[in-house]
Length: 267
Ligand code: NAD
Ligand code: 0WE
Image (cartoon, protein in one colour):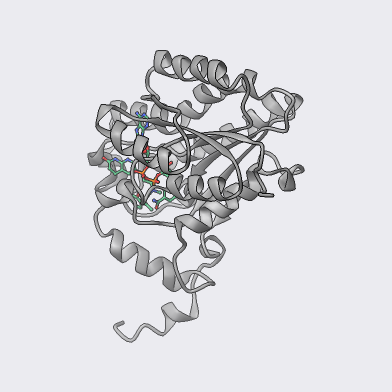
């Protein structure tokens, strides 16, 4: 029997086979969960439906998280199809590309700030509102994805760092708000991974190299590793864990400088 046998999970944020949400879906499927998916727009529909079918799922619903109507439609459909659910995965983030390229004060705009916070932080609240009634009193679990740029600055992450800080605070408030119904709320702070969301980022390759050098494990992490941690956090094995942020970053966040960085022969 799998760690998630008998559990029903809605996964928001699959865009490709490189998506963190794809790694989570793989692990959840392996551990016996029943899955439903959303996709961001018609362009992604077919691709997500195909992946869903491979995991034995025929629930694939459109959902742009900026639309309350689309979010409402997702949960009415899940109520019809499932009646109840156990797990909500939020793996969504966005800021306009120009906000992630250059000096923070120079590139940040009111509209970019608004969009980053709406799509990357508020959307978890909006989805939690819809999911909570379906998750009542069944040891449910909500999980979102964050990044260490919320805690320490780095080049170009800019307004996304603020949105992730808001998202992490929201995890604690949501945990308080949903704890009475037995629902746990946590986040995973993943190290950098080459996904679609990373593909537009200048010098991401260099960043991956620097990260591996500093991380105690001496390497970067994979979507499989994030998936496995997500499976644990959403399983009953983690029944005492809520309002937490768990780092899956090969230890990077704890290290100010590594021996490997000291020994770089190029410098
Ligand atoms: P990805 O591009 O595969 O996934 C991002 C998802 O966000 C896509 O599925 C996209 O459709 C969705 N999305 C964006 N705007 C949306 C909207 N308006 N409505 C609905 N969906 C929308 O990239 P990923 O790296 O898997 O990102 C998933 C999460 O992981 C994000 O929150 C990201 O910030 C976080 N994260 C990524 C990394 C990394 O290095 N890749 C590291 C830590 C955290
Ligand atoms: O959260 C993210 C990615 C977020 C992201 C990426 C894009 C690229 C395409 C949000 N919005 C957009 N908008 C686009 O138009 N990560 C944690 C990955 C990431 O992004 C960075 C990073 C890391 C790591 C940006 C700058 C520096 C580091």
